[in-house]
Image (cartoon, rainbow, N blue to C red; front, side, top):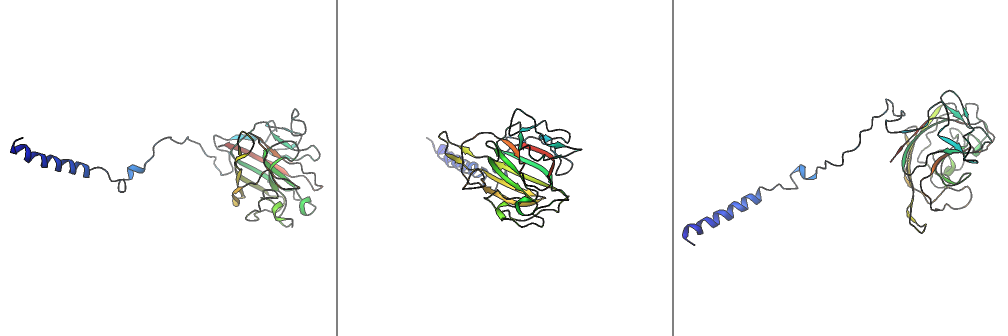
Length: 260
């Protein structure tokens, strides 16, 4: 090795150090935290917040209940009364549920307590949305519907409650005769092979644009009597309740769902 080579080595090493110094500093380069894939799908929103977006499944189109069937006899269609753009509970015919089964979803549903509502407490415009129907009757996970505009009842049974489990954060009810709307995010429970709970269900509920349930974690299916509990199930129908109280029947319209 001659003297010229020895002189070249420090120069080469200095060049390598300079090259290393030129590498991007993650703490200063914004590109190091950019993610480009996967690209979210394009969904065209409705003109108004209550309008179904382009990827929604329409559960009531304003004309028929073809997307629903009777809970008492799944082979029979839903027997509730369809009018111009809405449908009404037909007292005594029982609950109805969707033909299609769902897991996680975003649900929009509008409902109206009749202007001539009568009764008090739980006997005043009572109905409910079962976010996952797990059997006949009222088996499943219920979000309560009730006239509590000027009607006192137990707070874990008023509109927006996870029935007998979660008290709503507010009372955002409109007066009878006005259309009201729910926007609900449902995350279904997951189960292990042996039936134990891997992940409990959770729900977020808005009524008329007001947050009533903020990621509430359910203790199990809702029950009228006794403590809630989980029983293993998979994708389930969405169910609407024919409660059976003596007050005038409530109505529904504009129901759509987005699978998540």
